[in-house]
Amino acid sequence: MRLAQVLFTQGFGTRRVCAGLIAGGLVALHGRTADDPDEDVATEGLVFTVQGRTWEFHESALVLLNKPAGYECSQKPKHHPSVLSLLPAPLRTRGLQPVGRLDEDTTGVLLLTDDGALIHRLTSPKHHVPKVYEVTAKHPVDARQVERLLAGVVLDDDPKPVQAAACVATGEHTLQLTLTEGKYHQVKRMLAAVGNRCEGLHRSAIGELTLADGPPAGLWRWVSAAERAALLAR
Image 1 (cartoon, rainbow, N blue to C red):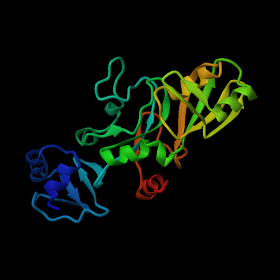
Image 2 (cartoon, one colour):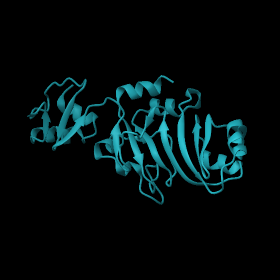
Image 3 (cartoon, helix red, strand yellow):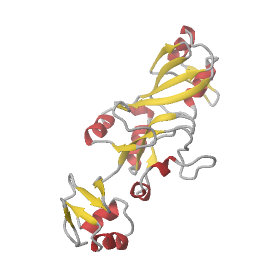
Image 4 (cartoon, rainbow, N blue to C red):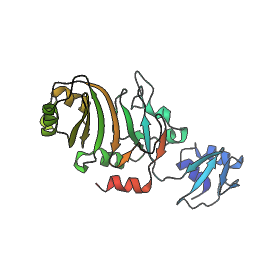
C-alpha cells in the first residue's frame, strides 16, 4: 500500500494532508524519515511514527477503553463529554463507535471499533459474549435476590424473563453479575426487579478482556489479534 494511503486509512487526515505530513518529514518508518508519499509499504505488522508518535497499522481498529465516570457513550452527548474525546484524533477520524453502551456513571471495560459487522457480532445475544459487572447495591444483598437474578426477572418492556448467566454476592452490599445480553439499563433494572437499587456499577470484563493489565481509567489500548480471535470464537 502507498504510504500516503496507509496514513489515510489510519485516520491521519485527508489524502492531501497525509501526503503533506510525509513530504514535510513528519513520518518515520523503521527508524528513518520517510519522505515519499508513493513509497510502497507492507502493512502486516507495520509500526510507524507520525510527528513523533508511534502508531500500529490496523486494517480495522478495535480498542479497549477503561471508561471513567462522567462520560457518555455517544457521538452527540447531551450532558457530559463523549467517551470519544478520550481517544486520539486518528481514532476519532476513523469513526470508532462503542460496542454497546455504558451509562455516564458506569465505569470499566468499553470496546470501540470502526467495524460495523464486529459491533453486531459482539452485541448479539446469540453469540453469548459474557459481560461481568461489579455492582454496589443500596440495600443488603441476600440469597433470595441472587436466586431470583439467576432464575430470571421480568423487566417492564419485555414479558420474557431475563436472567444472569452468573451471580454471586461478594459482600453485604455488593455482587458480581454476568450477563450475555445488553438491554437498556439492564443491570439497574434487574436489581430493581428484585427489590434493591444499584448505587454503583463497574464492568470488569467482556469475554476474556479485563483491566488486570490496564490501562488506567481514562486511557485505552489496542485489542490484540489473539484477544480479538478469542472474542469472535464464541
